[in-house]
Length: 126
Image 1: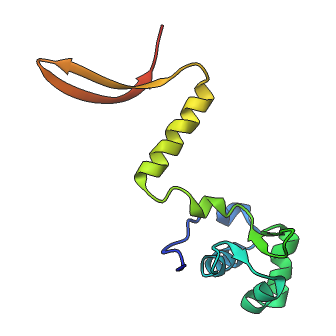
Image 2 (image 1 turned 90 degrees about the vertical axis):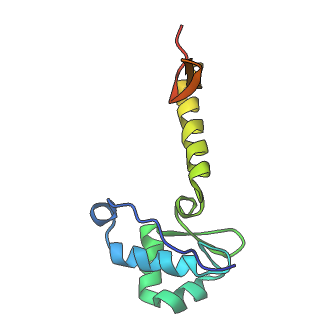
């Protein structure tokens, strides 16, 4: 498995994280692991980041220990999903549908003058 081509960085990280640079370094090393976002052992993380940095990441909750001894970067799923526009749109529409409950989204296709026009998505009313 190869490394990810890029790391998604939330812009608010500079205001919400104690050390944004350290977080970015952790994410980059996590992307280079055979199983993205997981360090095989604490020793691997110590070697890559340095023992003091790895300890700070653990203390801050940037990584979490798994029962099998691996370490998972917290919220790594933000990096992995939504690889394509199709995936992102499907997840977006699923989220919208789940929030709306009984209301459903439907394509707003209309036929005017013998031509079909796609007007996007809208809510079922009435």
